[in-house]
Amino acid sequence: MSDERDGAVSAGDGTDTPDEGDTGSPTAVVTRPQRPSGKRSRREGAGTAAAVVADTAKNGDGKKPKKPKAAKTGPSRNPITFVINYLQQVVAELRKVIWPNRKQMVSYTTVVLIFLAFMVALIGGVDFGFAKLITLVFG
Image (cartoon, rainbow, N blue to C red; front, top):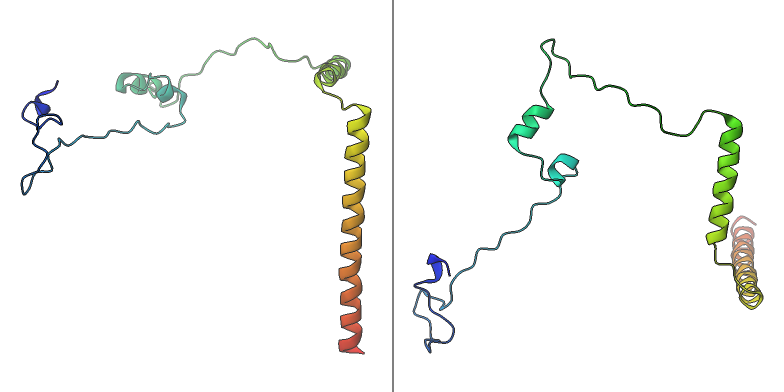
């Protein structure tokens, strides 16, 4: 145990009645974790003062040091290769789709058509009501 609790009243020693200023229990310090900063260097624990100074160091001419360009590893610039790659990815994604069976498709279509008929009737009724109201007001 820590030194803070050595003189504190423990829960099982029978002294449950606190004195005038004493609550009978030791006070605990609650610490919360730091909120994420969003910076990778701070999230990975590399945010020490030395690392920050090294990251923000400048050359003698006042400019940041340039990093060497990495070799291209991305997609090629050939449009035919791009289209072929795109179609292969489309086929791969379509294989992951869980297609509904006939019973599900009929029930989903029925629900959509009923909802569509309801919305058409609702909007048509409101439009008809506003038309009647305007003819009453303006003659």
